[in-house]
Image (cartoon, rainbow, N blue to C red; front, side, top):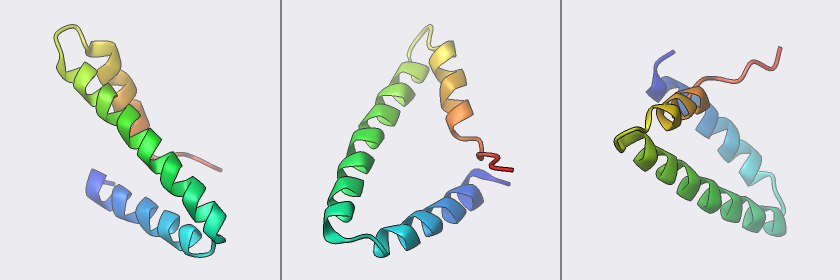
Length: 69
C-alpha cells in the first residue's frame, strides 16, 4: 500500500470517529493532533539533519500500517 492510499484509509477512519465524538472529545482530539503533528515535524527535521539516521528509521516505522490482527 503506498503512503497516499494508507493516509487516505486512516484519515477517513479518524474523521468518522471524530464526527461521533461529543464536543469535549473533539476538543481533546484537536489538541492531540496538534501536539503529535509538532512531534512528527521535529522528527522529520531530525531525520533530515546530518547524523539523523536513527530518527529516519523511527519516522519510517511510524509510517507503517498497524497490524491489529
